[in-house]
Length: 119
Image (cartoon, rainbow, N blue to C red):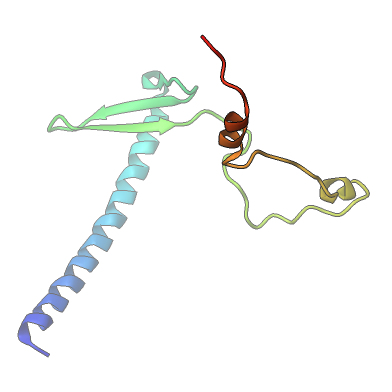
C-alpha cells in the first residue's frame, strides 16, 4: 500500500474518532440547554403550533433555540405494537370493493366525440 493511502486512512480514522467525541459532547450540551430551559419557565414563549420556545444567546452573539412541541395524540408510531385482532367486524374491512376511475385518455376521447359549442 502506498504512503499516500496509509496517510489518508490514518487521517480518516482520526477524523472519525474526533467527530464521534464531538457528537457525544454536543449531545451533553444540548441536554444541559434543555434542562436550563425547563428551569426558566418565565422565559418560555408560546409558538404558533401551541408549544413553547426558549432562546438563549451565546457570548459571541450566536443563539440557541430550545423548542417544546405542543402535546399531540400520538407522538410516534410504535412499530413493535401488536397487530389488529381478528373479529367478526374484520370481514367488513376485508370485503371486496369495486371502484372505477377515468383512464388518462378518457377526457381526450370524450372531447373528440362531443360536438363543439359555438360562442
